[in-house]
Image: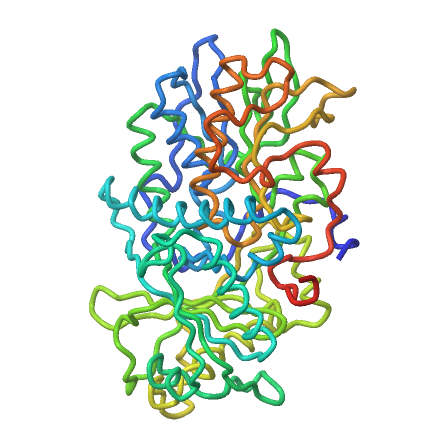
Amino acid sequence: MEERARIPVGLPATNPIPSYWHTPKSPLANINHSPDKSQDPYDFIIVGSGISGTMIAWNLLKRGSHNKKILMLEAREVCGGATGRNGGHTKAASYRSYLQHVQELGKEEALRIVRMEWANIVETHRVAGRLGVECENEVCATVDVVYDGETFELGKRAICELRRDLKEEERRRGEVGWYEVHEDVGAVRERFCVGVENGNPAIVGGEKVKGAFEYMAGRVHAYRFSTGVLAECVKLGLQIRTNTPVLGYKPADNGLWEVCVADEKIATRAVVLATNGYTPFLERSLQGKIVPMRGQITAQRPGRGSTLPAPLPTTFSFIYKNGYEYMIPRPLPQGGQHIVIGGGLGRLPDAGAGEYGTVDDASLNPEISRYLHGSLSGSFDAASWGEVGEEESSERVVHEWTGIMGATADGRPFVGKVPSTDAVGAGDQKPRGGVWISAGFNGHGMVLCLKSAEALVTMIDNDRAGEPNDGSVSMKGLDWFPRSFVIDEDRLARCQFKGRMDLLQKHDSV
């Protein structure tokens, strides 16, 4: 893994596999506002147009303390990266990391992470509703079907301790601490229409269901959500230039920054990196701290004889010893549903090392394809899935694509002011007052990005207000935000990439 982390990160591929979610494309897909002809610099240049860049722009524009001269630069089409290519799942699964976070960070910080993830889910769906964004916005229960006994027992313990540590009102149905543990395998099969054994032909030896956990989550068309909010940002004055890769940035005169694109240099008072897995291309100090990680996803159709409710009332994860898959139903306008399922990294040798350090979302991994193609017919029982004959099974996969996520060495995002390091194109070490970052979401951006963007803009507000005056980041007004997410030199010094943290067996360390 360390070798993969050292691979120099490049620009996004110019010919990515088309995403299932990009049909139809947003009217903003290839928008290019005319270059500003005035001599005034931008207040902010945001690099990246996914959910992080979008929500950073939204928060900057909605607050009255800033000039509204903001430019967003995107290397490909709007929302052409991970946000427009993900699984559409607003699901935290906070219990899976809770024990480890308590051990590493303490109970107070572990609870702060749990509550922040929940608040992110709630706020994402609230914003979609309030703005009237048509994005298949649905809060619903989710189910984790577990195929490994040790993982199931650890999950029960984690849920018990998490619920004990939360407040009584947080344990009520529909809240952050509401969980139902299902230990009767027959009842799990009947209630959730899954088989008692994973019948995926790619699995040698079979895996039997050990139980299930049910709790709250949601689903959303992340591409439509982000482009819908971006459309509101444009109304408020945001300028966007697509198909404009940023090649670097460096300090300029008068305390400004110079952002370099192919044919010009653009002056700004601050640079904001919302580039997730691609970040080390621009900020070389983060090479090996944020590592690109390729994810693979399919959209599949149930068989014509399927007895599954359409759409399924819950989302799912299918969890085994070394990994998991994530799944949402997607209702179709004409009736019926597609099932979107991604994952498969945990089924690869060497912990899927070959999927790290790459920004190639123009190709598929055939081993993951083989596994994912049999994932749904293997997880749901045959009667529920309803597929009959080889001809129908060959038509199972409607679409398959990849996307690039950003994995961090400690499994947590980097949010805040980039510590003092060399800027691309600047020779010696330079002071860094105006480069900010919200990136490295480890495949969980839909439950981290929105609130991280809010926190980042609060940090920027504090900085502009002169708080504090020693150059560090002020957490004023951010009692709710996890301190362990804030980027600083000490944290970076401790980071040594070993692989994706949420695929580790938590019982090895707790």
